[in-house]
Image (tube, rainbow, N blue to C red; front, side, top):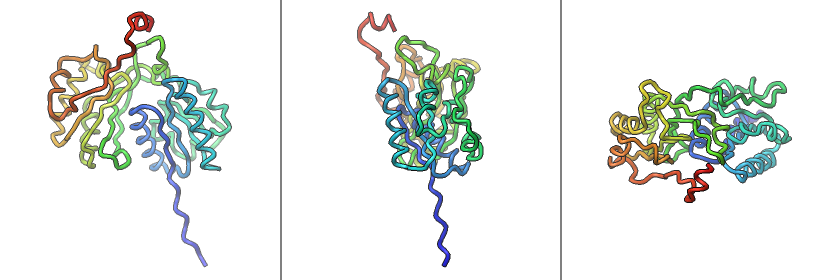
Length: 270
């Protein structure tokens, strides 16, 4: 008597941290499925605080316990910033840097799981571009995230994020519009623009456009979009076109402002 083949178990992605990580997890999920990576557990970590680093370690140990025998692949900001610590964890099968995780070739099982190379984390400061990646959705949710920018050129005293994300780099406007159109076509009525330092978008692109220009272009070129939400921004960097754009009824009538502290001395030290 022959038994039907056991269906392949898709790889699981566990996301910690920010909206940008949520978007990148969907990109990785798509790459893993296309490459035929089966049964792995991918942990996309955060490093914004010491508590986030502790949570990353806990999550990795729990993932290994809950999925005995499954490869545990660790990536994200925590892995980028402290590669040696995570590589020393016996639960970790492979460790992938923040740039490497976004490349389709990284997720080929023959390359990813073969051999003894445990750590693939390059110098994030050497990365000069951020490409737009088309995704079909966010796990069936009506809201979807679109990455328009990555990295940060600021070096605030208490912030470690630039060392996990690298310098600021922007996704070209045409790529952003294509991503938004794709997600609207697949049934997402709300799009959230995300990045590490969102209002720095465009500074590295030809003509140095600003975020307001991008928002206005999306509103003009994607008429079927029902709501556009702007993620956390640095209020001091808002441009006039962005002020004009937020009066459009399609744009959510509120946004998150990054207010780091209320004390002038602390702000000066930062």
